[in-house]
Length: 140
Image (cartoon, rainbow, N blue to C red; front, side, top):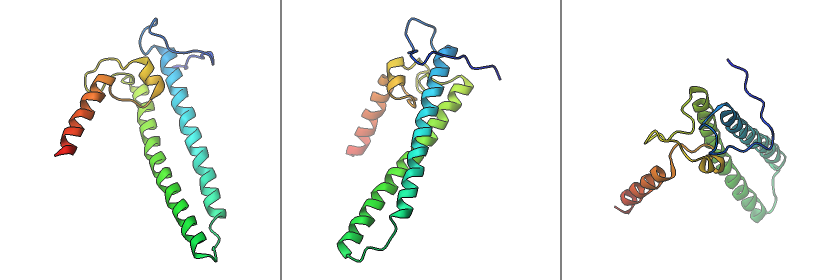
């Protein structure tokens, strides 16, 4: 595997350079990896907090409140687990050369969209069409 280019910490992808060049791929790989690392760190902290918080509350209201907090936290962790799989899929797309291209049209996804949502698989236009179709089916 080729050596990844070292990029300046202040580097931001620009429309003035070739789309998904080595620097851009490395920029998004680092962004995705850092995001995943943050999620995993938060997850470990939550797990540790849940383990220390598991003492019995003598008061029924305290126990109910604690159980509600725990359920909310576990739902958030589940969403983050799904997010990690999307991050892993985005990194795999960087590796296979399909990252940054709309799954529906094959056209490049705008750098602004990728910077804001690095796991995006659809261009804004394709995403809007997808959401409109979803809304039509939901309204039935």
